[in-house]
Length: 123
Length: 107
Image 1 (cartoon, one colour):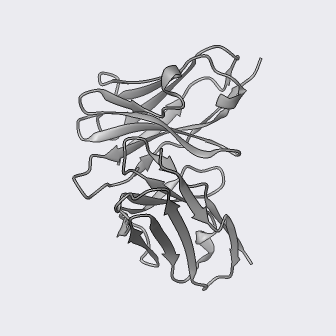
Image 2 (image 1 turned 60 degrees about the vertical axis):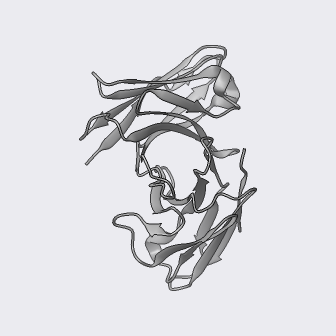
């Protein structure tokens, strides 16, 4: 079955760019899915960061939109996340997750998640 | 954005108990509501999608109901492996949001 694995540096300095990769195995990044990033902190719980789907269209959380970019590399079967100008508030566990395209009236939810990767922003 | 409020934030229950968790949306989301279970140190797992459809492999003691702004997740007979934190998530609009979570603890 499809598995997701996040990777990237566990420590990022303030004001720098956080870059994470989600490697997809057991299936290809094809049309028909929303590839999402979500983060979790003890204080704010689960926070949706954004997703990319089908044609490459992206949607981002308005609170992060100016600093975030999600992209897909189909040749490598990977989804990437970049967060610019990070602060301590970006310290979190970051998850990638997949949601199948729904139809009107039906949404299939985030059915596959990676194990998550912990990122600390500190000098 | 749409705010999702879960209640209670935590509860204590015994094995065999019937447990109900509520999720309320700040505006109508039709039935675009999903439920997840998360255990410490692990990623969330999908339990229920579109308010009431059980995800593949999820035990039938889990059920979901509701529409509009009010939704419930029910565990009919709590099992030892069900002690965890439960989250709701709306997908009614392109900006998805999660509830703050309900922690189910052993009494």
